[in-house]
Length: 322
Image (cartoon, rainbow, N blue to C red; front, side, top):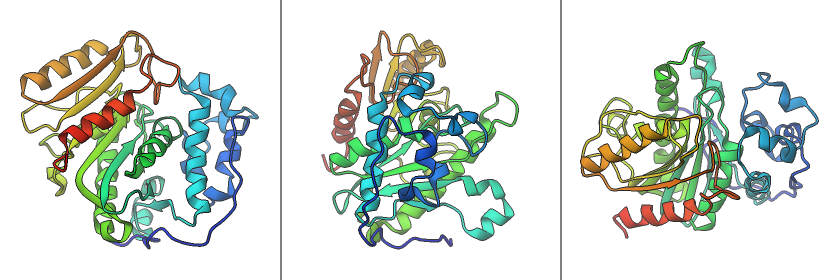
């Protein structure tokens, strides 16, 4: 496989300014720290939504997007700016120029990576967006910051989207799964150079991203084994889209956080999924709050606040290294 820019993430230190809750989404896209990949930072495909060019602040727009905390969103972005200022290359395309020329939609896929403790395990994060967008600014970059602060190597996937005019997610799910597999291949190929371990790795996903990473735990064609990888030590999901395939005892330990008043996904369906997994002998940690809605990210300001710490503890409890 040929990929551009796969050298270890080092370079010259910079001094790019940080963002604030008064920053616009256009400020993010055009930020010099994100030169060459600014369009990959925001939830929408380039040109698809007018909001990106409106003079709206992150703080003003965040309630429109969900129960995300604006400061948490900004902190996640500034975490990435800090990495660039330290001389790190944080973003890489997933496909070569020849592959993109043959399939232009592959230009939309990419991988953010920030190294943690050398040789430490990987946390792989995929945001949601209903397979029409990828909301990393709300459901991945804040998680990456929190996980990196604990010493973990963190990767954030920007996968391809598009439902092609219908509600069938099988096509975009398969496409996103192809991107996830390519990202894992890239991480495996450069694990030594980038100082990460795929032993005891975890996969994290919210909403559509939760459905994506859940599929990675199955024994079917979208699963880790089908792509030549061992399953993760734990699958961590927030308000995941379901179903994702038949449950069996081989499915990895599964963490779920969801709010009972979620109006986007079927919470009773999540309840049944949890029951089925437990009946199959799978370790499950189910955090079901009374309120919070759909799309609360890290849960700041909601009853789900603190779920990430519980998820990390669950992951650690099922890691072979303890």
